[in-house]
Image (tube, rainbow, N blue to C red; front, side):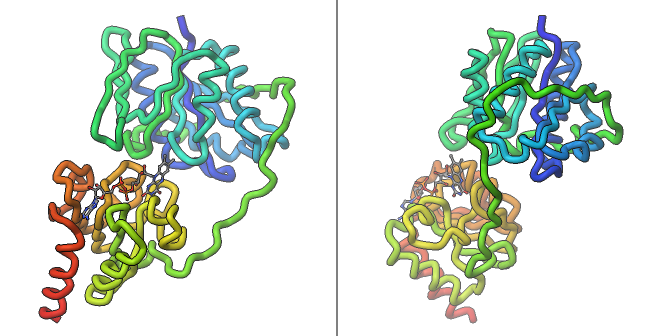
Length: 322
Ligand SMILES: Cc1cc2nc3c(=O)[nH]c(=O)nc-3n(C[C@H](O)[C@H](O)[C@H](O)COP(=O)(O)OP(=O)(O)OC[C@H]3O[C@@H](n4cnc5c(N)ncnc54)[C@H](O)[C@@H]3O)c2cc1C
């Protein structure tokens, strides 16, 4: 019988980030349903300051060490393996984010337990834990019943309420000694991204282009819309990866989070990593020739058509109105 549910605390340079509260809220529910305690695990250098944010846990395992300022994934996975085994945990939740990406699969391999990615929901019925994962860019939801009592789960950001994971107290803290492992490789330093040509987070109108724009010449269609609506051209990741626009224009998980008054999505499918960066825009208009594209699930207005037919007509009509 496992002794606890664990949440790997995610922090950026010592400040606890939102996904941690989401996981603490979700973990609290699982722990209560299974009648086991919820343990938060926090590692790093000078991470004492995180403790007051972890009140939703029953206890905290604190792994603080100078050498943990910027450890590589192998080192983290080795340490977490040791914590998981010694504390006889059954489930560890960690964020499906850029910060913790890579740790989950590595840890699961070391522990020889399943790894479940893109978790959107977790329920417990009659002692059975069911994890719902989002697959194929949100087109499929898969329910997995945990038959093995041990599992590492990567939680998709934004899936759970973060308020449920907040409580104003410091739970009992247990310091965990770093096991004897080799401290290589580590990251050398953190480099702040350079400021881009346009700060797309400050624009009130964004005309965003995706792979459906087909080539760099067609970006002029988006420029035409900008010339009548104002704002700036942004893009999904494939457009940036092609080098058609600079990285400073990328919207999404590994780009910018934007909340303009108007967001045009031209030839963008609406993959979760893109939607994460624009879903809170005030008005979303999507143009896509695939009626089943997930972007239409978040768009307020959708036009199912070829963008090369629609955009010139839109531009002409808007010009005539001005
Ligand atoms: C860790 C990680 C981080 C990521 N970070 C990001 C991120 O920050 N931002 C991001 O955007 N993605 C990110 N991605 C990639 C993401 O998963 C998707 O692959 C990407 O968003 C897809 O971009 P897209 O919608 O432009 O392309 P596609 O998914 O290929 O969609 C193209 C769309 O264009 C439509 N289309 C084609 N031709 C036309 C036409 N003529 N007229 C109208 N519609 C047309 C198609 O129907 C299709 O829906 C990340 C992925 C990972 C794994």
